[in-house]
Length: 475
Image 1 (cartoon, one colour):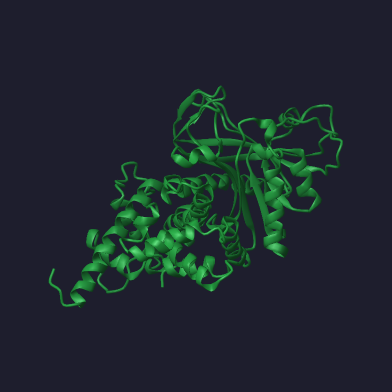
Image 2: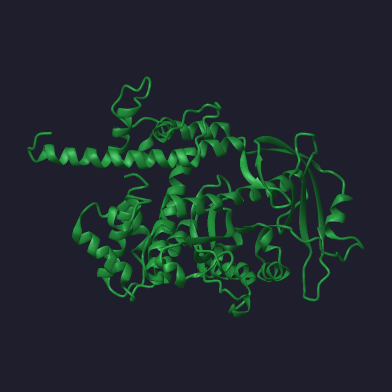
């Protein structure tokens, strides 16, 4: 059976939910499986015209006895179980907004200015990755909140979300928390968060935002780092992307190879509270005429920095942080969290709580077929070739790869077994419009998702036709 079989996937995630009744548990599993099978579609469309299923699905979404928190907790428990075997785990933290303009928006919170038509939730998520391959293990934490129009009406400071995420990871992961490295962007550069991680002897890599005063020297953090000796160089690929410059103006960042010089230091911040020494890795891109805004990372960490290899490992860890941005895209766009149109906030929250795990599933699907790319980036060429040569039936159902062969028959494939994973990846991407004009062999997230969605539509037609033939009907 494929690891992406919708029924098995849903059962694994929601079988242990505290829904109060076995019938409710069965309903959650059935609805989540239908939504996963038709990711990105409305609940009505995911039921494919079955009126009983539609009624059952909406009854579930409207059931006040099933809280969104319980739905999420069941999925978090499954992620904790999956995380057990991994030697080193990355816990990627970040915040995003779920935005809505339809009727329910007036009951949700502020996202921009008070005059904005869009309103919604702010959501802080923690995604677990395998540090070795950077493949996604699962979602271990989410916190939703509504931002009031008047900041003075807020119950508490939002900066507490970082420590709160660590608290829940600690509770859910137990003893294996010692293998977990929290990875955060500059928003998490808060002394109270760093002190909380140090108090619990927990590992982290946090990009620094503030150049704080140091105990060891009269200079500040950034000044001190500039005075350190270079430890070596590092080259990374910077993808093309629409972004903003330091003044907040939109710019088009062209793809390039960035050469970084590496410096390290151990420092202690001057503060009223107790702060232990923290290691720092400073990666600065060499300036050139073609680079207007050179890359500059100051990474605070608990990880060792005694050797260049150790410092480079910390940079590798931080570069995996962008994966949670892919999760946000998979959740909101791929799984359709922002396209849901329930008219009650709690009903909407139940739906998007299920869709969060479906977003992870979409992300994992893409990773399963692009793993060789990430292995090659780590220099693991032979491991990458071995993955590419694997049969694609570890990822695709038999009906899926059989239908896919009708669109792109693999060259030299003569036996009746499933073709390779590499063939499946390129075939799905081609269905999504991938033409490989840059000769990279790497399809975009959009191409893979569009190809997967197209394949699922054809598989549905194939299965209907097969049933008709089995019933003796002519086509």
